[in-house]
Length: 209
Length: 194
Length: 212
View 1 (spheres, each protein chain N blue to C red):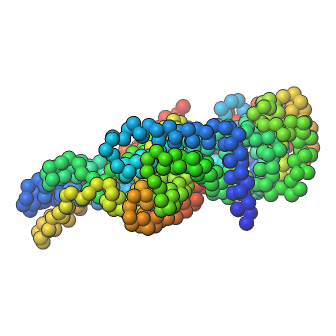
View 2: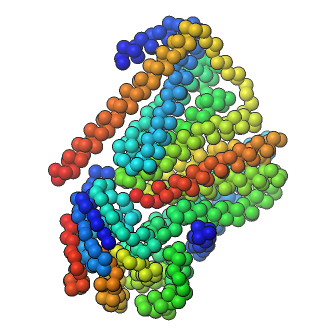
């Protein structure tokens, strides 16, 4: 897995021909897609939890949302770098993608605040699950709202140039996407295992008491 | 009426109920005792359906409409009067002849004079008595009482004694208390926690 | 039809409790009026009408937050919510009753605040008013669910704004758009979409939020 990751990370910059702006794109979009995927996974696990009531789904949902938030913030950072490279500003309201991620970032940060403020148990798990579902519904609704807001919020000053990708560049892009997804998956499993271990440790400590 | 096997309730890592077995036939009277923090309240909440057990099998043969519950708090709205409170619950529980039954209950528990005053003006004992009215309003087949004597005044305790004597044998009762002496004679089953 | 009867009984209870507490409605009203006045000092001299509409919506969102907290905290304070959860009625009726009651208070507060806004700042046409009502609906529907979630934990007054604001963003877009854009139908339609989707979602998931 690490080999695949390294390979992909090397392949992409080689094929990218125009400076930082292009290279960041290879990073930014896969990260964004991965974030969406993580949020989707979080919502799916949340649904499973509400439906079946098995505790492990709550943990899986939480970890997925956590990963999604990490990748979401990376999206914002890489997006900001891209904006600086392309248009010379660190932030622009005219990039719908960026604005959407800002809203989602706020939403999912509140998810952690919610978990933090409720006592561990079924109530917290259920509320978190419902909130995670709301999040995934919010994604398209927010996107629509941001599109509608274009009219009067800020005029579109910068035109978005999606890079035209030739065959090899597209291959590199896909490789990068795969690499990022694998990275996310690895992180997800690592965190999940870590959380499960600490839960088991605590259970053991509780039982010994 | 109630059948539970290996009942467990956890809040995160904290285990409150550890593998309980409960068997209570209809018209039985279960007395649950134990010190504070032993899980009496949690057990009653699980039996009432307010909390789902983390593990174990639980069968309670009545649905929500035939179940009555009294907690430490009276669970009534302080800004409403006794009449308004009972009217609300009467509607939600689809109690027939609502007005008459409310009147009878209030009289039986000595709250008739204060019926149009807000609960916020009641003493703790009076409010708890109203809570008892709320729990009995729909003539439940299963009655769960969590430390009912704790918040009652002398008058209320006397009324509750009378009520329990009348109900024992006719309805199924589960009472959690750490003063079991009063109810020793009525109980058909005992469960000691903690 | 017993469902609607339950909702009516619960909504009546919510209205009565909040009116008798005598803090919800006056607080909401005073808050929104005070905010409108603050805006005058917050808006730069050359700001146009559009900015005023934006600020109006900020005021509305924060007024709703006030009302929502007041609506749910009493239920959790003495655990009275348990008595409703125990009742044989559908749990979603509890949500619906609370939503309708909060909506009633919000509309009542706006009945005073909106004319004041028109007086102090800018006109509001039919589309703007329709947008306001639709967005109010969305705010109360989603807010009721989130407030019930938040009230079960600690720092509930802090948590609710954090939970509601991201979800309120599309509503603000809709409300402001309906007020200032020439293509109002799009915004009104969008608000209807939001309300439909999120109201159904809130209605269906309330059960899970109040039971363990």
